[in-house]
Image (tube, rainbow, N blue to C red; front, side):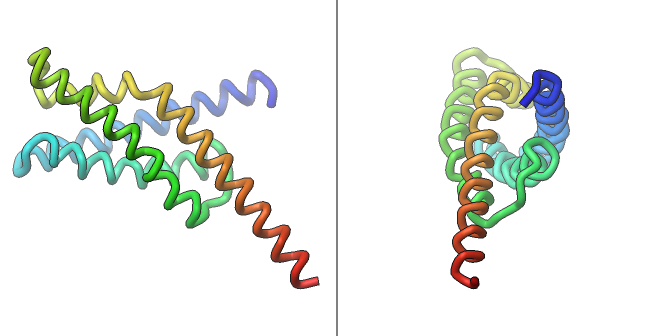
Length: 141
């Protein structure tokens, strides 16, 4: 993959991340009106993971959607969530960052990790889907 293609993919990832962050942050603010900030963050984060899987598969990495990729995506993001939630708690509880602003700082810190995880999971899913299609084609011949 050429440098230009890599930069274009990175730009699509960042744009999708910005859209996802706006969506997740808006949902977080709405949920935080009725829920404790960590519960609101969990629900908004989960909705963001679903959107992120779709956007990254279809727009960024251009791999086919699959159940295996969809199911693996949240499992890998569970680790990212734990890191994000710990960072959120650190910012709010220890550094006294307002809970309405802290998720934005967390999102900015997590961009490189999110890119690496997305690339890894979607590449694995695409290889797995291609292998399954090859096996199925061979079996039907």
